[in-house]
Amino acid sequence: MKMKLMGWAIALTAIGLTPASLAAQTPPAAAPQAEATPVAAAPAPAATPAPATTEPKAVAPAAVAPSIKYAAPSAGIGVPDGRKGIQEQVTEIGRGAAAFHNGPLLIMCVAISIFVLLLLGYTMIKFRRGAHPIPSRTTHNTLIEVVWTVVPVLILVAIAVPSIRLISAQYSPPPADLTIKVIGNQWYWTYQYPDNGGFEIVSNMLKEKGDAAPGVRVRTDADGPPLLAVDERLVIPVGKTVKFMVTSADVIHAFWVPAFWNKIDAVPGRLNETWAKVDRPGVYFGQCTELCGPRHGYMPIVVEVVPEATFNAWLASKGATPKGVKPNLEAIPANAPVAGAAPAPVATAGSPEADRGSVEQPALNQAVTDNN
Ligand SMILES: [Cu+2]
Image (cartoon, rainbow, N blue to C red; front, top):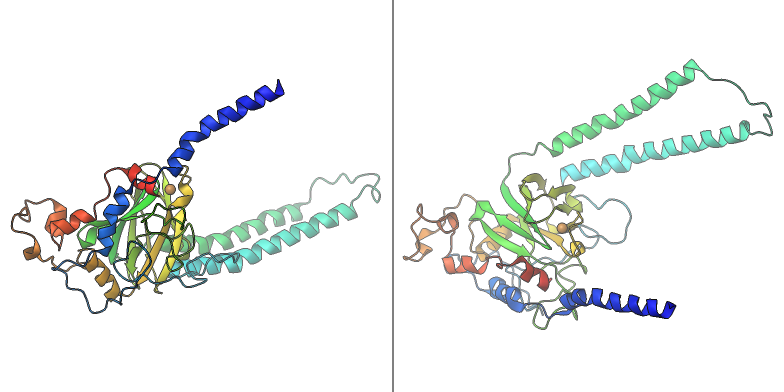
């Protein structure tokens, strides 16, 4: 009987597992990745002269070369390295918050814990049954009652004042130099640059060698650690106030880059806002921090913070223009719809429509997901 039950259990497990394992092992639909391949590798369109500031391209073993030479992450900054505690912060808000946490908050926390422990130990020993066979019947002590009410209130006020100041600074950002729309998808991120013609990049986690289908770009150490590296990074300029409008295309995700001290939910049908003014170029890793489905753990965020010249070079490589720069309308083919009558992306794009087409998101989310 037992054997029969076990047999059934195994059979059921096998049935239950089959679709999932099939989905995981089916060679990924190569379409989206193959489509993406020419995007990054394509030379900048004629309308956008390659700026002199572009660093020489790395000959990566990858099938898809990034459009600018991505920087390699620096150890210990913007990337988890096994140390405990809060990551080194690269924004003013982050430094303030981390200092508040690592300083006053931790000190108060430790002091209160030790005080309560000592009090407990003292009470247990002093008032043990052996020493006091007949218990005391004390019920009131006005002085102690006042003290144990007033002291915690003072402690809470001491915590509240700097916290509220911090929160208010966090939620009243300076005017944005650049706005980026961040969209969570099951299970990848898309980033739109409305200030720069509204182009969009799709950011997928890079697979490990051996996990990816042949020809698909795999992670290298220059991309970042396993499970955190992505194919297309979110690129922003250093020292500029960048506003992130965060939303979702399906379920609730959350946008979080620990080194920026910005964590915010990505809720479908709603625009949440966060910002960062990063004062150090570098590569910063984050993750989706809302349980959003089985591949929740595979939608990392990589932000590369670059000098403005490099940022403009990156924009150019995407066929976009820096903010405030008039797009070169002559570059748009004569048969393209006229600006004004045209749909917004074409009117604002600084590049031929063909180039825009190449950055389009694959029609099906599932196709991208399969490729994850
Ligand atoms: Cu998510």
